Image (cartoon, rainbow, N blue to C red; front, side, top):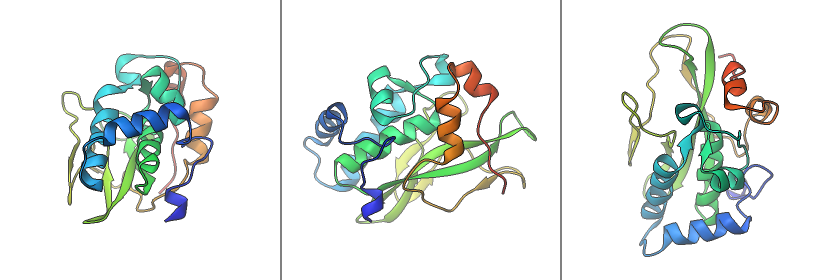
Length: 190
């Protein structure tokens, strides 16, 4: 589990702002599921999805997401992992491959998280941000992710990564605006 508790360049939970926010969110919680739910709801509801709100700057590191209050799904998953790890709750990154439109190509990755809860084991959560037609909830052991898989070209990758994928980091660090990221969304073959 150590890798899912580690501090890193992008899941920089040792940052003072992450430590402070994680402690604030954990206050008065009685177990790991209550802490995880608070962290999830904070990232889902208080951090704006960059594309939905057309918010710059493009963020990648967890501390940047917290500072600017915005991030693509990938960046929001980095923040959620950092908040959970700062509370000594193992957390990893998960990805789905989805249609970037309503159906068919092009395809892109969607970033979400897995959290290890003492009562349930690994449980996937999606703090992308709710909007009409997109609803994700924290209801262990039942998953309520933002997007269902609807075609054979889409998939849920079963891996739980301790660190972000290189293609995700590239998209978030090599594009200066949310519009540029949208034009270069990362993808991975099935």
